[in-house]
Image 1 (tube, rainbow, N blue to C red):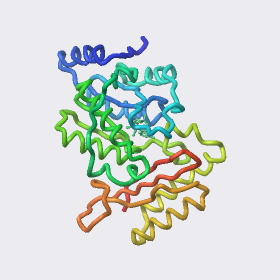
Image 2 (image 1 turned 90 degrees about the vertical axis):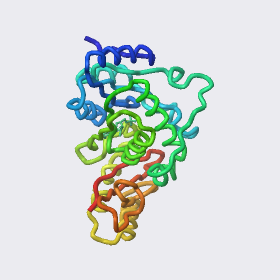
Image 3 (image 1 turned 90 degrees about the horizontal axis):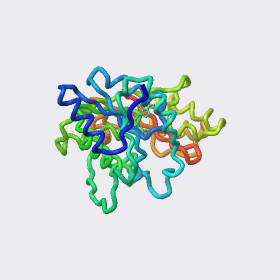
Image 4 (image 1 turned 180 degrees about the vertical axis):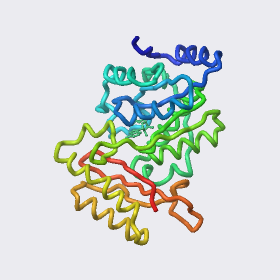
Length: 278
Ligand code: AMP
């Protein structure tokens, strides 16, 4: 049987309310479509934590700046639905932009803490768009649990903080980064890479690993990673850094867990990767 696709908030809510009335726990997997094995893994990861799963597909315009790739962002709903059919997803929520942002929409959430620095230096508009849409999806669906990928590590921390600060009654889970055979983190934007760029992209994960394991002092390790990325052929480096894994501030004596995070560009394509650091 084909997966049911809900286009309106009201229809999706009727389904969730029916499940909840039967005492079922409901989970949400938010995506922007162009689904790959990384997205599908989140469905498998959330499955043990709930009885029913909604996967949302919505390319959120408020997280794209005017010069970014909103118009060109890959879309293939038919292929996404076929891929989801083979997972434990029970239904899909795929609203139009006008359903999510009706005329006259003005509300925003002001961010601080882990939303500062890193991605925000390069995409100042990005997290305000992300927390807005995630907040809306969570309050629309009223799910008990939702899952986000460690691939977007800063995003995961920003969402956890938003949920905590705004007392949203939802448990946030995270899923590990799913990679291609050569280590490149899967991303919907990898389709933009030419063959030559794809070969360079394969080197990102190795350079990140060296940074994450480095015994050198932090500044030296970061500078080496930066140089290695440029040597490998990346066009530019947005950041290659080791941070406190909880706050994303510079590690201090109180830091108990560190994260290495790298973003490098090949032409216009930004490639993100991160891992636990020593
Ligand atoms: P997106 O469609 O890119 O907004 O991603 C939707 C969700 O999938 C986010 O929680 C991402 O962090 C997660 N995700 C994207 N790529 C991967 C990956 N390679 N492995 C695991 N999760 C991922």
